[in-house]
Amino acid sequence: MVAASNLVKPDSHAGDGEHAVSIRDVASAAGVSIATVSRVVNGTSQVSASTSARVRDAIRKLGYVPNPLAQALSGRGSHVLGLALPRFHGEFMTWLLHGADEEATHLGYHLMMTTIAKSDDGHARRQIVGSSLIDALLVVITEAEDPLAQEVAASGVPTVILDTDMSSRGVDSVVLDNERGTREAVEHLLRWVGPEALYFVGGPRGNFDTIQRAKAFTESLAKLGITAAPEQVCFGDYSLDWGKEWGIRMSRLKRLEGAAVLAANDKIACGIIQAATDAGLRVPDQLRIVGFNDSQISRLVRPRLSTVALPMAEMGAMAVRLLVRRIEDPSAEVVCSRLPTRLIVRESSTVVNF
Image: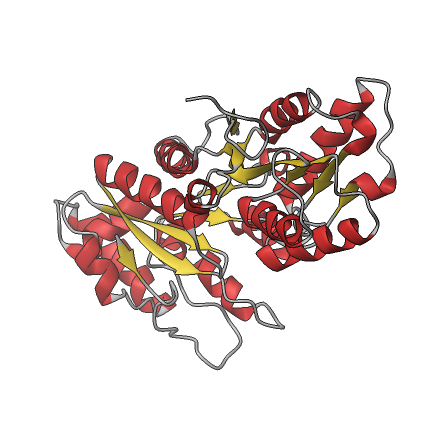
């Protein structure tokens, strides 16, 4: 895997307001495939004299400048896939990256990773989508209304979206089955408390995973004939501080003792456990809690945290498989692959006998 601060080659039109000429532009102008342009540029296989002349003419007219790194990586049958991640990291992204990198290597591709820089005018994002260093792109989009989603859909670059379903917009996607994990967690917690004492503490209101988990939470209660009260579903961010803030507030309102909580990630859950402990409440005797992610912290905290495990490595691998499929068959049916999640029960939600 190759890491880069961005995926941008030197821009031969710098300063004139146009985007950098890409290998796709050259292929289109010459009426050939991207692979043919790559062969001509890198001299890796035989191309007819007439086709080679047509490609080189297009390169000269468009001012295309092959990036040396791309040339080094694209020799003799290898390819480069871009992976654009939001500018935050942790186990969630680490395992996703690991799975994508292993699968790319297995399929004979190189993986180039960058973070998505957010600027006021979105300039850096346009460069990522239009980069000529890559043959295709994996993009992690965590918010359903992210403007980048529309840009990706219109880019024409073979793309697979991770963590947000964009199949209805014509882009292959890989998402988590948040409904299954949420439903299992709700059913588990309702063994110990009534529906009115069950809470969902989410991440950002616009985050795709939080939206899906909150929806599954309220639908699980609705199947029991219960309409979740507004205070039973809260939104904040994916941090320990937010979980602690929520826990302190609920403790002061005398609503924490005897309750059960499904947190949208393990950090939020651990923050709530801290607040409960500070308030003199015992987990799980007086408060039962389940998180999401099955991160390392879930196994280190005491009591150990029940959590919904996410197949992040498989998510990365599946995204690469779909992307290579799209490269090899541009007319293939657009799909959304939904990967299963599963509840892992530990001491924070029930007494575990060894």
